[in-house]
Image 1 (cartoon, rainbow, N blue to C red):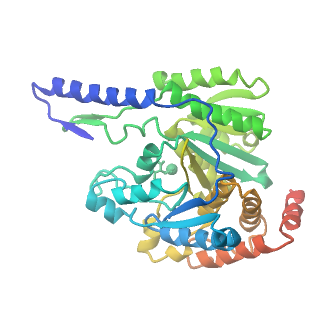
Image 2: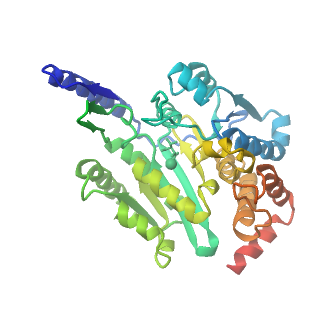
Image 3: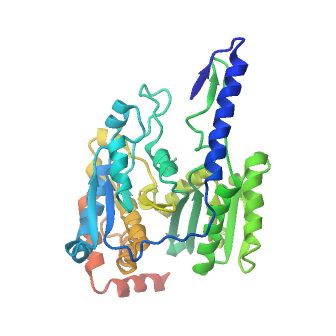
Length: 405
Ligand code: IPM
Ligand code: MG
């Protein structure tokens, strides 16, 4: 953020600052590639998975995911087809000390991995008395160009099967740390949406719909008010939609969309959503809450060279302060682990994890996590999941539940 103190020279300074921002963004947007260069790690062996603990409850839920993954990938790890790498140091303490969103040595280690499983990181906000460093998430997504944030929400009992394609590098996030303030008067933040940035996420949403048998893609926007940027997003959306005549394309304003997600009569009609960054951030928390809480939802951040998988929620520092961290729900990061396994070609294991998660959290619910001492611990829940995954009647059990819906 840049503070300006009104005086005669201010207009020149503001102009220079703004022109620089525009030049930087012109450069970034020019370099966005919209070639359909599908990259895949399905057959890449050895594949290196970097584990990043994060802050707050992060280390505790990551530890559980890692324990489950090491059991399920035992053979691959022994054959060195899969390599685990612990990446230490992406902590709030280090970020504050170095006044940097990602310390250099951490970033070097990240670049040497193919995919990352990341715990939530704490982002200080203005007024907290901490240095106002940029969010590690936002920086990682930008630096690794992880432009697509994919967040599935599935509730078979309510016939809900949603997949959100959230644009992950633009919108208010691109220049979120670069707003300007005129001392004691007002502040301005900048919202940026590019044609190419919109195109690549929208195409990905339609491609996913086509390849997975979905019939509808919905764009979320507020183009009635935010005319320029959301106008671009919608224009690109309907342009891309023309290439998929078999898929219904429609658009909804963010406010009524939020209402429709809790409309029990209509919500199951929606399938794939594609949204600018901030609307995606907000709506996916709401969708996750409908699924059973933000602690249940995983997310994939996909780029053209790297991919990072994480929970959709934050680091819950309050749970650590209140000494409740060992009651943290690991479902979200385990769901993210399943998404990672699918991405790197272990579809069978991913499928088992997904079935076990649904049985554990939506059907059988033998062991329930509440985040407090009246519920199970992270490890007890992990053990429960493992027993389901390793049960050779898992699929039969799952189908029994599904058939009763
Ligand atoms: C998310 C989170 C992040 C975001 C925060 C931690 C910066 O809320 O992944 O949804 O806003 O994108
Ligand atoms: Mg969020």
